[in-house]
Amino acid sequence: MYIRKTEPADLEDVMKIYEDARRFMKENGNPHQWGDNYPTKDLVMQDISEGKSYVCIDGDSIAGVFYFGMGPDSTYLKIYQGSWLNDEPYGVVHRIASVSRKKGVASFCLDWCFEKHPNIRIDTHRDNLIMQNFLKKHGFVQCGIIYLEDGSERLAYQKLLKY
Image 1 (cartoon, rainbow, N blue to C red):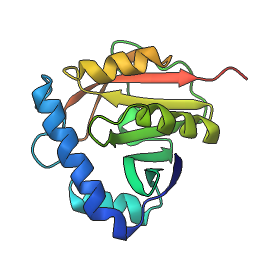
Image 2 (cartoon, helix red, strand yellow):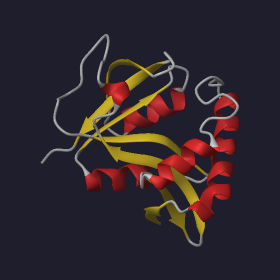
Image 3 (tube, helix red, strand yellow):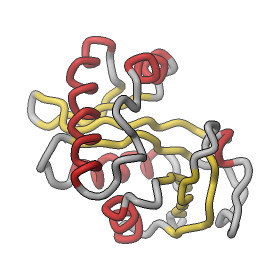
Image 4 (cartoon, one colour):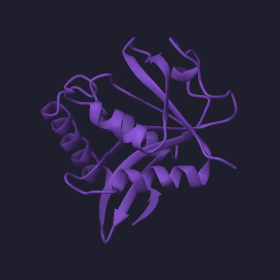
């Protein structure tokens, strides 16, 4: 597997991965995090145009997609019921998803992000128990609660690699 920037030609495949992820979340007790149409095509195209959308390639097909950028992230400026591990520069991961039943893709993507920066923040919905367990398994610490621009609550996580 390898990671590359998402290209506009990838949009159809990427949107299919997100559609499958929304269905999976609904089937596993998390119907509200991405609802019926998040992320939108417009948002994914914005991520692509900003150079912050990446795909994970396995063989000759896209196995996963995610957003990676450097903070500050506006939704991470205030944290409630806790605190971040530090105030040092950090990378941000959003909208991570993989093709159905493909093991190891999300881990591979996060490992790639840590090659780019040793301090990563990420968040997830309270109902997304699968992602919460995944993050804890991969050494992320739950730091508190953040709120998205629309007021939705998210559990905030951070991980620091040891230098």
